[in-house]
Structures are given as structure tokens and as C-alpha cells.
Length: 451
Image (cartoon, rainbow, N blue to C red):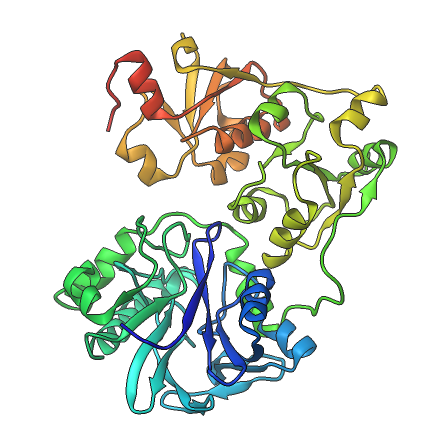
């Protein structure tokens, strides 16, 4: 493994890793850093580093890049693929180009597949390759998806991904592998705790590197792909044009209950970020429940309608800056503010609320069970007779679902309460949310899950 000082900056919610490289002279390089720069700033300050370079392996679909922000506010030099045709100042690199980082060097390797213009960056210490930032090409145990450009190009990109992985596999076994996408990423990465690896470990354990040819590789990769948030189809172009530079930290403006009521009447959508139990007890009619947790950004981008203004409801103990930063990093600019005083202010003003029933596994009787987990989770084990609709598809299918007593479930309850709020907004009533998941149901009832 490399002895170069490389610090992973893990975004558990997006399932991604950015990287900070200490160049040893008071300067640093960041790779694939998002617009939520808090982690990079903190890590750089701890080491007394100036962020001199920011490299992007590709036009990201799952977050806005922070590279342009760094360039505008800190004079950081942006390194990215010339084939990406970015519309802001950057050093456009092509296959084989090298950048002198002051002792260390960064070599661009064309690795198309995840995107057309994808580059991996080989970090060289003298002539020794220390590690490679693989972005969305070679992942730990996998390779990133190739279906984010267009359906017509998906298979051709998968074949390019095969060639790119074979090229990376030709590096020495001891070279460190530093991918961007990891477990939890909708850009296609398997579950697992490891976020970094080596070329040798991937050659030994990555099934896609053992595919006999491009045909077998493409079949295996494409068969493994699940759904992804619709905002993925917008952000690559936003990153190509260049994300708007923030002149101040994102924040939530305070709105009194009368103003929120007026905004709702004009078509605004309320996003309730409170925990499951608090939303269930009382919420604004029509509010969409997206509990604040690391994956808040992904579900906000997936479930919130893109056009109308958004109003946040939160608990006092929940950090408004966390909500604002998570929204900013996925390009959600439609939040107009938050309900000042939260639900206490809403109820004190005598305004209408609704509630949602929470049930334990042993309280499910003859209700219809709706499972809103991802398809792979449902296939791994579900309640007998349960209907399956992924949460991300539920808004489009709500009208087709029977208006019968329904228990909505997921793995723990956060996605289920979101599903119940979507159904409620579509006019469904007599809804309940299961506290827990399928394993809890099996343990409490003593019954077996279906697969």
C-alpha cells in the first residue's frame, strides 16, 4: 500500500469518498470533492494545507463538484478531462498528460465507461506509482454503472468500461485503488465496509475483473444495475457548465406559519425532516417526510418535486446547516426557508395537522403490506403476500394502488414513513407504518420470509 499521505473524506449518505492528498509542502490536492466542502476544509485546516489543486475524475451525476467553488474562492487549480468541455477555467487533461504537484506527479489515464470523458489519476512518487484515483471506473468489488448517459449508449459504455478496467488491472499489484463510489452509492457499488483496495486485491476478488470477455462483462454489469434518482440525469450537465459559486454558506430562512400556509396555497411542498415518530404524531397535511440522516440528500433529490418551492420543517435539535448543505450539494436550490418554531408554532396558530399510525410487527392483521425497499432488498426476503413498489417509483404509481388499509414498510421505518406521506398526499387514507423491517417481523412472528 502507498505511504503517500492520502486522507479519505467519506460521504456516508452518497456512498462516496473524496480524497485529500498532503503534498508535503503546505499544499494539498483534493479529488472528486463535492460542493459540501466542510470535510475538505476541516481536514486541510488540521494539516495546515492550502488547497492548491482539485481534480475531478468525471462529470459527476450524484453531486455538484466543489472544484469550481475552490477555484473561485481559494485560487485552486482545477484538473479535469479536456473531453468534458467544462465551461469554466480548468486545466484540460488528456490521456497520458502529467501534472507536477511539487515532488509528486498526477498522470491522467483515459478510462471511459461510467462516462465518456472519464479519467483515472495515477499518483506517482518519483517513478513509483503509489495509487490510482479510479473515480467511477474500478470500484472495490465492482465497477460503476454505465446507464447514466442514455439507454442507447449504455451497452457501448459498458464495453468501454471493460477495456478501462483491464487497463487499470495492468498496474502493479501493490498500487492502491482509491475509488470515488463505494458502498451505498446509487452509482453501483456492492455492500461492504471497504472503500479502498489495491490492484492485486481487485484482481483476486473483483468478479468483473474475472469476466472472460467484454460480452460477459457487459452482461454481468448491466444485470446488476438498480434504479437511481432522477436528478442524476441533470447534474452532469450542471457540472459541465460549472456549479454556481456560493457567496455565503447555505442556510434556511425563517418563515412564520402564516407565510408557510400562504406558500402551500400557492403550490409549495413541505419537506418534513423530523424523525419518524415525530412526523407520525402530527404533521402538516401534504407534507413529504424525509427524515434527516446521512442519506437525506439522495432522497430529497429523488422524491421532492423539482419545480415548486420547498419549505422545511425540522426539530430544534436538528442542524439547519446540515439540511442546507445536503440540499446544496445535489443542486437543490428551491428551498425558500423553514417553518419558524417548527410544528409547535404551527399548532399554536391553530392550523390543521394529520397523523400516521405506527404499528409493530405483531399488530399487522389483515392489512395490505406495501414494501418500498429497493428491488434487490425485496428479492432477498420479504413478508408473504407483500406488494413491492420502490419508494422512488411510488409517487408515479400511487393512483394505481388499491385504496385499502395498508401497512407501509422498509428496513427500519424512514423510507416507509416517506412512502406513507406520498400515499397520503395522493389521497390514500387508513395508512400505517411498520416499526422495523422484515427481519424484525420474522423474529417477532416466528414466520419465514419469502424470497
